[in-house]
Structure formats: C-alpha cells, structure tokens
Amino acid sequence: MPGSFKTEAVVLRSIRYGEADRVLHLYTAGHGRVGAVAKGVRRVKSRLGGRLEPLSRVELVLHRGRGELCTISQADTVHAHPTLRERRESLERASQACEAVLRLLDSSEPNPPAYNLLCNELALLDADPARACRSQALAFRLKLLLAAGFAPELASCASCGEAENLGGFSPSAGGVVCAGCEAGSFPLSEDAHRFLVEALARPLSEAPTAPERALAQADRAVAETLEHHAHVRLRRVA
Ligand SMILES: [Zn+2]
Image (cartoon, rainbow, N blue to C red; front, top):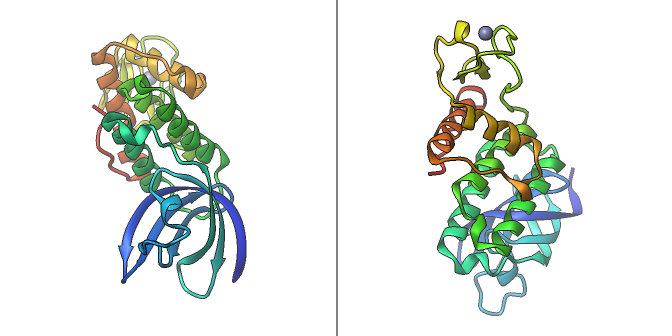
C-alpha cells in the first residue's frame, strides 16, 4: 500500500545506483525485507549518507510509491557499530551474519526473533573482539535457522524417534539420526551434538564453544540443513 511508514532496520547491503544514489537491502523490524533507494547519499553534503552504511542499525522513515523500491526520507542512527568496522575479523563475521539474513529471509513478513538476533549479534561483535570466532558465528547461524523455521531435530532420531545411539546427522531427515537410520547421514560426535543443543538453548551472548573438529561437524550440519530445506547455500564459517 502506498504511503509513508516508520521502522527500525539493519542495512544489509548497499549498491551504487545512478549518479549519486544508493539502493539498500534492509532487514526491518516491522516489514521484513525491504529494498529502498537512498537519494543523493553519495553527495558530499548528504544528510543521510553516513548513517546508511552496511551493518548500521537505523530508525527510518520510508515512503512506498508504486515501484518496487521504497524511498528513504529520514534516517537516524540507533547503533552504528563503529568499533567492529576497525577490526577485520569482526567486520567479516558481521558481514557473514548480514549475508545469511539476506539469503535466508526474503519475505516482507516481519520476523522479530530474526531481527533481534541480528541486532544482538552485531552489538556483541562490536563490543568484544573475542566474539569474532567460529563458535559464535555458528551459534548465530543455528539460531537464525530456528527463527526462519528450519531448526534441525536434535532431541531424538529425526527418522524413527529413537532417543539413544544418536551418532549421525542426516540433512535430508532434518536432524540427528540413530544407528539404524544412518543411511545418507554423516558422523556427528557427542561434542558436536552438545554444541548444537546448547547453541540453540542458550542466549546468543552465552554461545557455547567446542573443539575444532566438533565445530566443523556442526558447521556441516547447519550448512547442509540450509541447502536441503531452505535451498540456500552459504559459505561455511571456518
Ligand atoms: Zn532412527
């Protein structure tokens, strides 16, 4: 419906457009994914320019016309995440998080858990350099799967419901599997299984850690679940 609306958003991606404009991919609190034009932002005197960098959390007034893209008429900074931009690893993890949201959540339906998760992850990466690690990135991705409705089954065999001998992970079955149902699965160690369970259960700020080998298995479980059920292929979070 045409008209103006106000929403909070994270700038996921920004692309040069025309002489002085940018097209922004936004993940908004109230309207899910939104594409918007920021007019004149590449001019030196632009009021909006500096506030609409990728990874910024902003409060926006958007105008929806007849076209596909909204127009940004006002932008105020909620959190610019200035310190994560100065650290290469933090910046990479933050970009990965935005990329995952960009690929996985493309609907205009609001998804408050996904929005809050992204805001939390960016704030954690900004506050603490030690957050720029594989276990934190995996915990974020797993929680994003949950928010998007693709969380893997971890409590019992995804094929038969058996609660014991869960030594494999089957992307096609959608979770852990028992010894009797292991066709099409790959081995999942106890450490990796525990990591997945704890990462889903705990708040993002208390993300668990695990040995590298277990993280590699958890990474594979998350990536192949996404490929199989959401048809989204993301780079692994090595
Ligand atoms: Zn089974």
